[in-house]
Length: 403
Ligand SMILES: NC(=O)c1ccc[n+]([C@@H]2O[C@H](COP(=O)([O-])OP(=O)(O)OC[C@H]3O[C@@H](n4cnc5c(N)ncnc54)[C@H](O)[C@@H]3O)[C@@H](O)[C@H]2O)c1
Image (cartoon, rainbow, N blue to C red; front, top):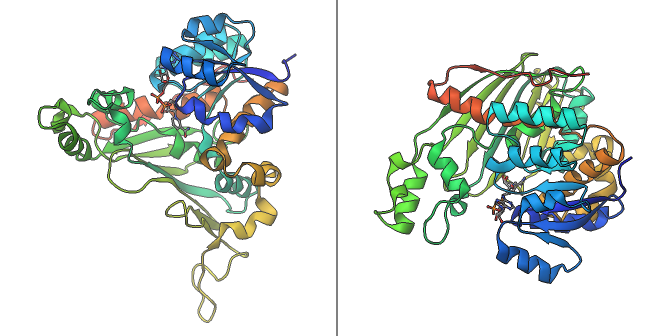
């Protein structure tokens, strides 16, 4: 029987702090009881501001605490697999920030730990839970778009400032771009699409194969030269493995084509909300930026005809929100007014809500370990494909013990 409310520890005070805003409305389900970060000065700050919490600068010590039921891992993602497995083996449920794993070996080890412990593991992919992505999921699952054939997603967000500290020393994000070339942060663009296609779910689809290519490096070496001068190693183009724009094309077992783009270096305003979906009866397109409405055209419901019929009006896009009466997700209906202004347009709230609810109801969370590892496996598989000039690579089916 799960403890109610679940006693949670946040591990990692950067992204971890963002979740403070969404905890209050969920206090009957989940309660923050502890904070852990390896940076002593940050732990000291939390101690002062939140004397009600247990505080730890050692992750090992946190895992020994009998007063913590679950951890939220908001640490660099290169640590996620190891920290998740250790938490599960210590009897803690795990909510893990994206991405979950960086190698296939880590993925197998994580699946094994979840299967053996029977504890709740969820990956915190918040883009799945945005208002528009949840509404499109309902529409897709109800067959509004007809048989699906194509989906696209992109995560384009210039975060070069997070790749170094004030002196120019690389952070974990900078080291990743120095050492790998591929789609190394795939889940923001892929997660919602996987949800729409019911990937890994009963009667749903599965990723089959992928090909990936990356453009040349342009943005980082100019940026490092401007900021830190010619003598910084990052001022040399060849210092960086990662090119600017990575693309991947994924084919699913049911024949759907998924196109992904990832770029965290190019100079432009943020565009983290680019998605599209095409089915036999219509299509969805996200707004070009955060302030533009998402749009749809649905045969028989939206204005006009496609293809065009002489003397009849041409097909015309309309706002997705015209369909909120019928297809707004019930969670958004319930919580929208209260949470829309909280982290990432309210989506962080639903991540935490889903995690706590899955524990309380003793069920798999919406983004379970099989989703976490298959979505995250785009990282190593795309690196492999890029190394061989876009050669297709096969996905791995991690659900060997599926009941
Ligand atoms: N879903 C989203 O929208 C979103 C947004 C931002 C970041 N993230 C993810 O959140 C994670 C953290 O990102 P960030 O921007 O906060 O990174 P960050 O580098 O700013 O913060 C990481 C924190 O983890 C701490 N840490 C490192 N190793 C530790 C250890 N062994 N034990 C305890 N603490 C340790 C660091 O001291 C630091 O305070 C990443 O996985 C990132 O991908 C997700």
